[in-house]
Image (cartoon, rainbow, N blue to C red; front, side, top):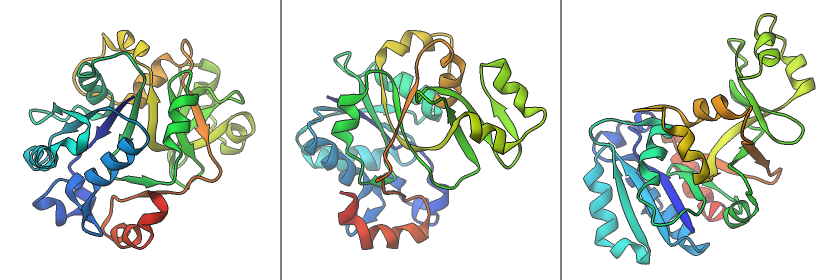
Length: 252
């Protein structure tokens, strides 16, 4: 069972903590986020983990290696020369796995009560875990849970390979979108199927995995899983650290 941990971000929202450490090393009740996630992944049977690194990369590498990789195989995808974003980061990291099994992709700063093993085992195609949290940017899915587009409700922008959906941008009405499609927020957790990697051949350098999905979702099923019981905490701001420490056991 494979997993990719996105840990390369600059963590700017966590300044000044991230002036001296990567966000992956930010402690929650004395335990770094990277350790919390590795132990959770190991607990569901993950045997191979790749961690992408950029900001204070050696701190993450030294920490993991000093703990004997927590008893699993861990490799590092080096992005110190340039941040590759989610799509480019996944493309580079995927070649480090020794098998063609699906990859559980997880942002290092996300804590949740998600049943990751169930998500992994049920995902016959690339599947994004989604929620109904309030945000400005939403993914659009049809009634069969297949990705069809993206929208920013603050600006009225729509991205979609379907001309009839993109055309809705001209006279943007959120109520029309909501009547036709399911509107969800991405959780930072997904299951990626390596069968999509050949479709990334023309995508070079840094790029968004969402932009990649939006370019192919009219040809390949990119699905979502919505769990109404999902509780998710993005430990991306200083005020969420205290919340995470108070409720950490709930998310583990």
